[in-house]
Length: 277
Image 1 (cartoon, rainbow, N blue to C red):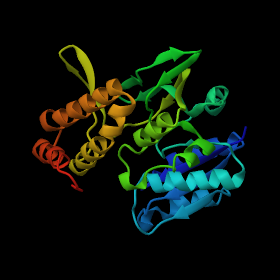
Image 2: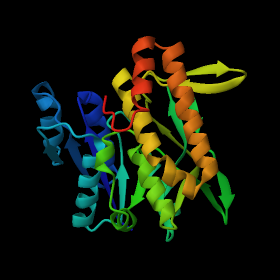
Image 3: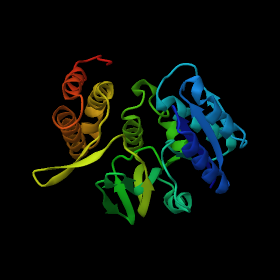
Image 4: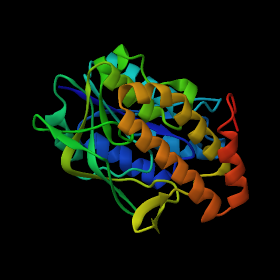
């Protein structure tokens, strides 16, 4: 099998982006960098990546991560790659990471992800179950995940109407609706920074306060509610778990984070049909 890589960027940290792209090239993989209308002050960072022989697509209008992910699908298809690794600009791929996912990229699988996400606040895991020797879950974060190019093309790619929030959740939902599996690579960990995330104890349970901005709260709630009917049809348990997580996230934004009033109002705006910000 052949793997291609896409790194969507927006205001990338120059040293981090260069290190990430260099590590991908060292693994012998083709990589596309697609930038979502970063200001001109980031030109030097993107030119440094181009100097490595990497294709960099620049956009003048900000449209969210889904557009870049779909450009990655096109890049993978044109390159003859059967799988696409999607990587955020602030993720770190440990040595051998990609090879640790490949054994699980088999027929019937739509996406493979690391079992654990190592965030600055601690280790984050997905709810999962073992089915026929595969560790199965309902959805994964797109960063560090290996997507079947054929599967994603058959489900229509990543939903650009969502912009940034829940794009990966929507893709996993479509994959499951088409009878394909969302698989975790056991024991594999990926380093990734989830905003300004910190872990908070509530009634003895650890939950995440993400620190996302007020405007992001609106789109997070709106997009999750948009997916909810289809999620309930596909997996009521997962749908309830997702809505509970969104409710907790909104509550934490209003209670324990900065700009609490603005975040509370933003969460309520997300409940209104057609709300944008």
